[in-house]
Structures are given as C-alpha cells and as structure tokens.
Length: 281
Ligand code: 2HA
Ligand code: ZN
Image (cartoon, rainbow, N blue to C red; front, side, top):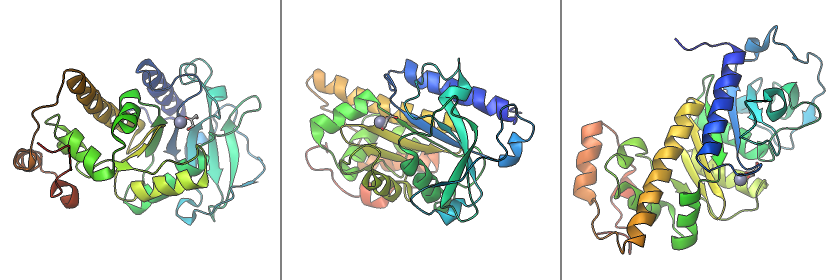
C-alpha cells in the first residue's frame, strides 16, 4: 500500500516533476501541477502555518470549498523541486465558499502559487463535476514538445487531432477514449485560458493549449503524467512518420471500434463517427 503521509505525497510529486523535466517538457520555469490533499494530513507537519491570512482568489469555486491542494510555485523549476520541496511547491487551502485561499505550507521563503492557479483550481472544479473528487486528484500542465509542434504544423481541432492520434497507435483510443480537447489560443495565465481549460476538462482529461502545451487530469499525478506520455508519444510518432513522407497507413473506424470493444471503453461517438478531413485514411 502506498504511504499516504503528506511527506510521501510531496516526495512522489517532486519525483513526477523531475520526470516531466527529464522528458523535456518543463524547460526553465515551465510547467505547473496541483494535487488535492486532505487538509487533515498536514496535522503535525513541519512548517505548517496555522494562522495564515486569507487571499481573495478573484473567482468563486463552491465545489472546492474547504479543499486543499499541493501546488507548484510560480516560476518553480521542475528539475529542482526534489532538492527544495518547500520552495518549489506549497499547499493552499480554500475557504468554505471557495472564493478565498490561504497558504498553509511551503512557497518558502517568499514565493506564491503557480501563475496558472486559476486554470488549476477551475480545472479541479470541472473534474469534480465530471466525477473526480477524491484525494490525490491531480492536474499537470507542461510544454510537451511533440504536441506543441503538432499545433504549429496542423492547427488542429478537437476532432481531427483526436482522430489522428487514435489512428497512429493501437492503444490511444483505449487510454483516452474521450479524446483530447483543443482550446483556442489564449494568453498564458489568463481567465480566458482558464475558461477554455474548464470547457475541456468537463468532458475530457486532456486539453491542448496551442503554441503552448498540454493539461492532463488524473486520479493521481502519476496517472496524469502517464496520460501525457501516451499522447505525447503518439504526437511524436506522427512527426516521425511525417518526416518519412507519411503517414500513409492508419487505423480506421472499423479497427478503432474493435480496439474500443476489446478494452471495454466507450469512445466519444462524435469523434469516432466523424471523418477527419485530410487526416483520414
Ligand atoms: O509555469 O508553464 O503556463 C509556467 C507555465 C505557465
Ligand atoms: Zn506553460
């Protein structure tokens, strides 16, 4: 059984951040993450602040009233969180109405939560509405290079990119049957980006930010990272096939339906039933 202590959660989170950096998805201060944590786990933890001041969030998320999240710090280096976890991340707790938060651990010595805090919290609220509500539920945002390259090369939409990725590797439709949502381009850290992310996360666990990166949701951070590995790999396969003059062969609707049946998943019917213009075999 996994160690459920707060220290173990921080350690697993820092390892995931390092893995994302090793994958080349978190250059410099790029990337941010958040993991839901039961505030009771922080009882007796070194460095906990009992009387921190409340900060107006500027938005209200009643679904998250009283919830707490371990979150990466603004500008944190994913490469270094393992070395200095109390600097690279922190814990924020929301008030019962979900309109204010306070820092109860970390972000030392004078840091603050991720610049994408609004997308993270609104994204968690969307996942709660979609049924993901437990401790450990996680969101990760990284600059996954193959996926970003794909948005530059193809300017794809939700249907065409999902069909493309499903059609290139036999396990994609099994692992993200609800597809990957493509948001419109939005300014990093903006309320518009948060709204676009929420629209995607209400239905799916992956949202692509064109010319920027990807957001993945999971019931654990490991699961979210695994999802990114899967789509990022498929995007890389496309780029390799394109460099070799292809892809000239793809899995079609018949094969995709067979795979979905074999794995017992229900793919988004609109995506499965839509020929993706210019990308279909
Ligand atoms: O945290 O990646 O989108 C830096 C970013 C913002
Ligand atoms: Zn980013």
